[in-house]
View 1: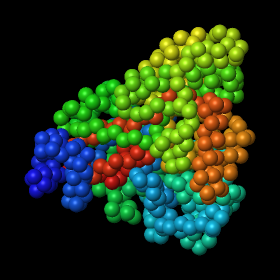
View 2 (view 1 turned 90 degrees about the vertical axis):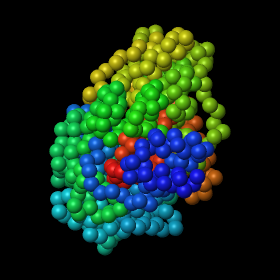
View 3 (view 1 turned 180 degrees about the vertical axis):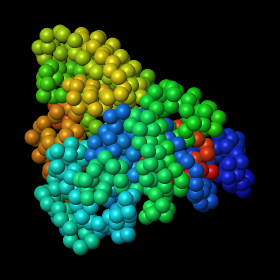
View 4 (view 1 turned 90 degrees about the horizontal axis):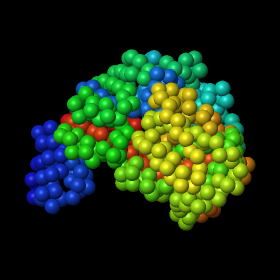
Amino acid sequence: MSDYLKYLAQKTVKGGVSRREFLGRSAALGFGAVAAGTMLSETAFAAGPVKGGTFRMGLGGGETTTSLDPALAASQVPFHLTRAFGDCLIEVNADGTINPRLAESFDSTSDAKTWSFKIRKGVEFHNGKTITPEDALQTLLRHSDENSKSGALGVMRGIDEMHVDGDNLIVQLTEANADLPYLMSDFHLVIQPNGGRDDPTAGVGTGPFKLIEEDPGVRYTFERFANYWDDSRAHFAALEMAVINDATARNAALQSGQVDVINQVPPKVAELLDRAPGLSVRNVAGRGHYAFVMHCDTEPFASKDLRNALKWAINREEMVDKILRGYGTIGNDFPINSAYPLFDDTIPQRSYDPEKAAALYKASGHDGSPIVLKIAETAFPGAVDAAQLFQESAKAAGIPLEISRVPDDGYWSDVWNKSPFCGTYWDGRPVQDQMYSTAYVSSSDWNETKFKNPAFDSLLVQAKGELDETKRKKLYSEMAYLVRDEGGLICPMFNDFIDGVSDDIQGWETNGVFELMNGLAPVKCWFS
């Protein structure tokens, strides 16, 4: 039986048998889907990558306003663009370990306040220039500048000084931080020539694919960079990214063979799509979450009672059942779940309580006028339906929630982080420090709830420098309570990443850091 399965796996890898047929025959022989899938993956890797072909991605989360400046990447398409044309100093593996990239090694002093990153030699930018430690320095300096509006600004706040010493980039912190290498994996921190100071929107990096054509909100085309430094990656000859924000059209593009992978498969159609021939739906749990955010500094959300009234007025269980359809778990109004190291699972779970919500709403003194929630489907799959469910559950508490549906195009530039009440999504970050530094510390540009709490900021600094994990976990727990009880985040659910993948694609890895293998599907996969 084992030899027969190995034969089938080899035939599947070569394209003679579909993945679905292989799994079906495996099941008939008594092998579970996980065991069969593992055998298939091992066979594919053993056979070795096949070079060539054009990898076509159908992606939701793009706009006509999308910029190639990594600092401004705020949705799925710009994230994938940075993965295609760029590299960071560090990458986080699927198992949470650190993978040195443009920094071939790193080290720190015993107090974790001074870090040294040795910059890899012989790496070439797409413009022919060879990378130097100065390019890395200028990149980090640009993202530390208030004027850059960088999404990484929050994680750069703790840096006191940086300089080049021979082949090394030296980073001196104001306070100790054992997680600094994880912070350097932030996808905004793509190393660019001269840090991107000359033209941050040029799309020039050291990544596996060189940009050929850019049509924002429509399509991007790349060719494999001939001088890419990592021979173990970039097996496709070319890469195409089609922006397809409509989920139905995106699914149809995969089914018809127009694209090879898609992101953001809506949970309500995932099982149906998985039954289609020639493809499979891959889902993985991670740190991603769908949420609604209120600006704590803007009326009527400046009232803590009103914010908490809305938190108690949302039916989380209903949303997980009806929006996620089992592809996720319940949230608790802070952005951390059990996928994170040092998660505190003793924090009481908040549930739907219309009576408590009604009492808090009354205590807020709100005048009864409509509370407007701006939403678009691009906020997250099922966002409009989720907003309508929220409206109904809030009505039972006497809270006048009004839904304002806005266009998908321009949502991330014109609504998110500007409207005082809207929908949002986060793929999460590898460690708690990075998540909190990116979106909850007072000084972050991406503080989408305008949560400015000195006690929280102080705890974050303490946690960065605390090397005792028991003590650090306690600090993170205190921070979670502050965000949950004082902040403007309504987090009803943590979502699985659900991708659609053609059976022609080999080398797929289960990676819950971000969607589509942490954005590395075009970098690590190949055609059968």
